[in-house]
Amino acid sequence: MQRESTLPMPSTPDLDAVAFERLIGENRPRLARIARSYAAQGEAEDLLQEILLQLWRAREGFRGQAQAGTWLYRVALNTAISHARRRPPPMPVDAVEERLHSAGDPLDPQQLLTAFLASLDEINRSVLLLSLEGLDNAGIAEVTGMRAGAVATRLTRLRQRFEQDYVGETA
Amino acid sequence: MNWRHLQHQWQAAGTGAGNSNGNGNGTDGVMAVIAARERALTAAVRFRDLIESVAALTLMPLFSWAAWHEGRAGNLVSALAAVFLVLWALVVILMLRRARRRLPVLRPDTDLRRYLLAERDALQAQYRLLDRILGWYVAPCALGVIVFFVGIAGMGPASLLYATLVLGLGAGIWRWNRHVARVRYAPRIAAIAREIEAIDKE
Image (cartoon, rainbow over all chains, first blue to last red; front, side, top):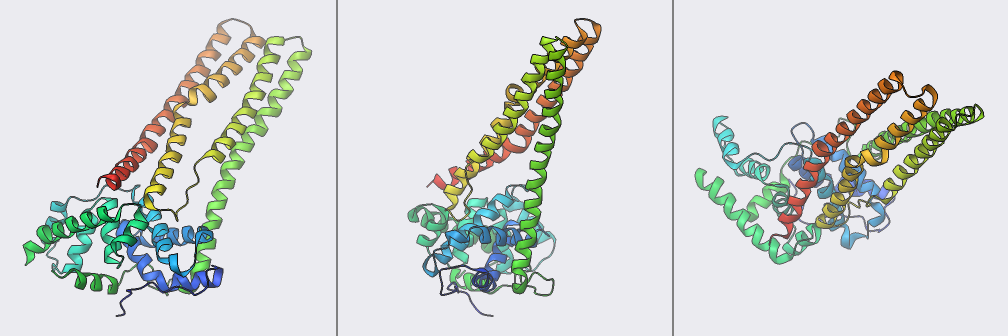
């Protein structure tokens, strides 16, 4: 499978319907991952559609290729976090682990990562998610409004917590 | 655990939502999906505006006529109460429209922190509107209709019963709106405050 290390973007800064559709087509997998990370089971498609609507409505703020990644992630995350606020709080880490073990699921890193993301509050989840999507600290800071230093500290803690709480047990 | 390897795996992973073109929501259907949601949203806004307008269009002509009728009959108390109710209905409509216009504009392409601040301000404005409904909606309306009725029926058991019913209904509306403010809006405002605090923590 292809790795999306850089955001594919249309070359023109004007987002008419055709350019918008191309932009969405090229970035749909990452938008879908964000939707799935914030939506309750069975609601990911609905959240994805809401994100698409908000992106279309925010197209006047699109400043072309250079800012496209920030624009896309900002709209997607803001929409997803508002959506997530209307559902029950995240599951505690212990409960997630217990459920994974009791279900007899194979504990591969991707599943653990998904479970770990689900156990985080919205802000920590957004920071880790953006890091997984390949954004550097400055990029994450631009999307979230945090300072880059704070992003770095938070990411270090989150990775340590993931490795201690999840990977440590299965290693 | 190699974090870069995890990133690779994450970005390559299938996602379920939004990857299928078979359900009509694939790349080709993006604009159709957006158009459908826009239509639904527009319809909801129009319905809300229609409800407001219908309430105004029913109340205002009714009490305008009542003011004219009672004035001609020499019943100044009821005529003034009817005028008061017409003005109140007008003020409520204008106030709701102004409040909606003054709500902070939510721009989803701003950074998360700014978006949360705007979202919190918008929710707080809606919370205040519901929490203070006694002053701008329930009390003036109840006062107007009670005085109007008393002006016609005079002081007596019928007016007392009517006033009791109106005050009871008003109290119910007041309590329900405050309940909605506390149950629907307050937790969301508190959640946003926690999110802003989490961003500002380090």
